Length: 445
Image 1 (cartoon, helix red, strand yellow):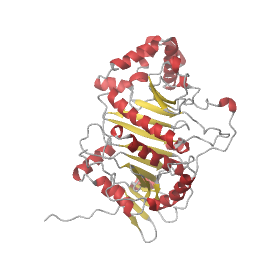
Image 2 (tube, one colour):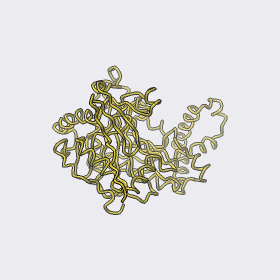
Image 3 (tube, rainbow, N blue to C red):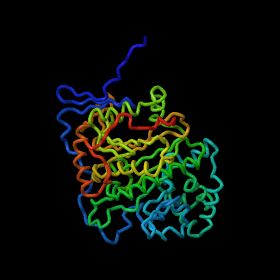
Image 4 (cartoon, rainbow, N blue to C red):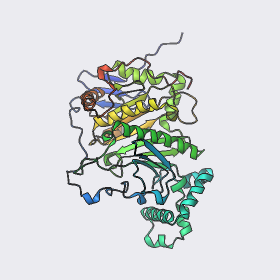
């Protein structure tokens, strides 16, 4: 008879109050040492300074009056006069300022994997429709000037001198800009730098300051953009989706944006998850959502998603899981995507705009045959890794999961009372937290 092996406890509380955490999916070990959890989160906003009205729309290269400082956009979402959302693809240079984009998808000026990477390693070339768009854009005097201007910026930032750039032919500069049309690293940029009506530079517009409707439009646009990047490049196996908020979390600008990076591997996180799912298809219920429920860590849920205080992460974290039986986000119903957006938006709003954080998306890679839930992890970048972590690979968090829960619940309730997050969220003890609420593997993937 095969011996029974009990799973380890992912959370252990020592006699002195120290909490030891183990991440069931990565194996990361985290300690929250007693007495350190009362330290403040620590804001990253600057000293308040009044905003110059003349700088409205021009605070950084992502702002709405500086469209020409980013590469030619692939798509934008704007509001129609009736209040509905309109998605526009292949915006021309002449159309850039015809509408005000609530969200824009543009190529990243400094790609993680460049067009040259895909071309050199796989023989990737621009698909015919993309090559046609590039040709049409360059055939326009305004479009050609736009492309050459951004290419020059990139060349100079990459170490070329002005004389070296001037020595390049126009054809060479245009060839350098192929990634502006067919590259696989995009940025989704939100319209606002500061909230509407802001009077000082601390009133930044983050994911949590959006309305419920606006945030849902951003999530829908992001999901559609994942699929678009996968369709663009047959060598891409996964699109990494993340959002860095504020400079301590890796943001170049304190202007809300997501990044999407097509890569030719699944990534270590996904590979580990696939191996665990082959051994136990229900592992994301058992070791994530069920466990969080049993340890009273659930923050909120609705019919389509659930959020809890995460455990076993290098930084204090919130986790949001889709309950959908459909693994691919772009195949989920509008209601299911809305459910995920509502919880993610609520977590951002309760976190606060002053907290640096990373938003990381996880979902089933394109070439995986096992079922895997769509989930998002929101990590608060409120501490700096130091020598202890490097020497031991044990990470110190100032907040244990229950402390995160106790901070978040009253904020979520107050936000719901004020109508700033989705009204239908079931918060704290209102959540049903039924075992095996994730349905990702019930339909065979």
